[in-house]
Length: 189
Image 1 (cartoon, rainbow, N blue to C red):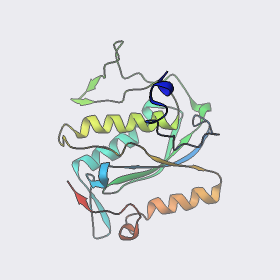
Image 2 (spheres, rainbow, N blue to C red):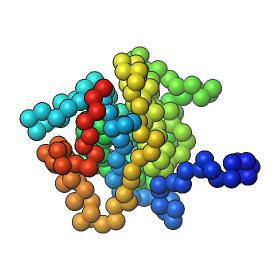
Image 3 (cartoon, rainbow, N blue to C red):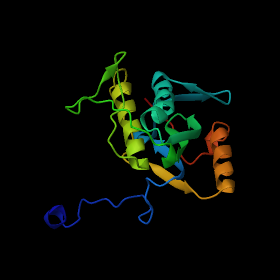
């Protein structure tokens, strides 16, 4: 119906690889940028990332992902001034009953005054990243009402151990190469 109504005029093609099921076991390199690459997460001083309150939330909620998606293991992760990089590993053999963080009316539970993940019931990279972005946005806006993400995220399906090691190294050294990073753009809050 929508295709006929708008003739695909407003349809944005997916950035995901169309021949791949993103619920498949595998390792995925994820990059998520803030809207307009605004520096919400802190700044780099003396070759170290100094997290803002929002940056600390970004790290906290990333580390919470396996608690809400039990088939996920996390590898290297870093919060940069205007983006996050991380590796998500999906292993469906470890899947258990998912933790529900909403009531029967699809409302988010509140724990210790902060909003929690809303499990979308899907176990794909997009649903994992979408849940992460959602919980961070809701909590970041409690102190910074202007916080926003770029609409999409970037992913790379990691195909072998060499690529995995190279990406792990890239993430670990991202702070040191910040001035030359393609995502470097100085827009302050």
